[in-house]
Image (tube, rainbow, N blue to C red; front, side, top):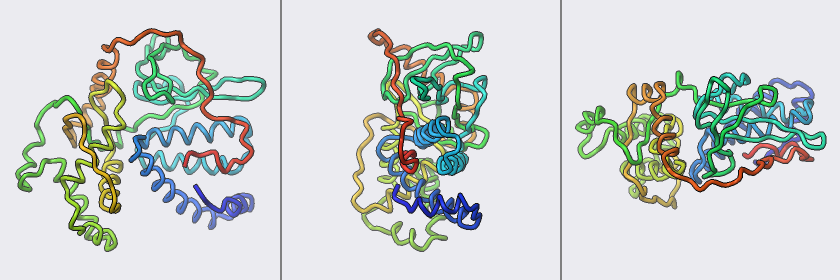
Length: 323
């Protein structure tokens, strides 16, 4: 992210609350824009928030007085809140589907191991996990040491209104009654259309892009599905996305003139509303994903010691976030 960080640092050092507030608003907007770009490349907002927080936390563990890192931590916490993500510090709060950071030392410096949690065995606090930076890593078990646990991030299901994307499995057709509201539109397409219609009513600039003759709701939804599908790890049969993630992709589709719309490789079913929330709360989403993954036979290999994802010896703290 290109920014005049010298001005930010000066404002922080002088405790210029007015300037700091302006910087926060402006930088959060840039973070959202850059994060959306990463989502279109296959990451999730969950990944972006976790990677950034890990970078910030690592800097602060090696230099707790780094003022810009503290500022970035505040911004990342706000980013997480906007995307229904919870940051926690108690290792007993770890649940399947979370992402966690564990610290280790080497020659006086602190490094992180980053994990995507698959399962938690409460009796012994043993985690089944894959290494976060491996897109298709081997599942392993690990006994966690509370002293080494730094933080974890989970989805705030209580605040999350979700679209559940099922690439290979349809649970039910409860929401098909929406299909008759607009001829030849699915309930998902109706939801996207309603959101974009309302946005166009209040946003004149978007209204112009929304009226582009070469764009359509159906192609917009195809674009959303194709992007979401890229976020799905091998073996997963479902994926939960927040309203903000889905609607941001819809707006991005209309904003970009030269966007490439790929056809999803798998059949996709979108379910929205109370049924989706109940599936997440009940853990059925995680069960479907982990069951598929664990049923797949993998070649066994000797576990390797994970390398630190971030080098803590960074001379310029301005470069620590992934934005």
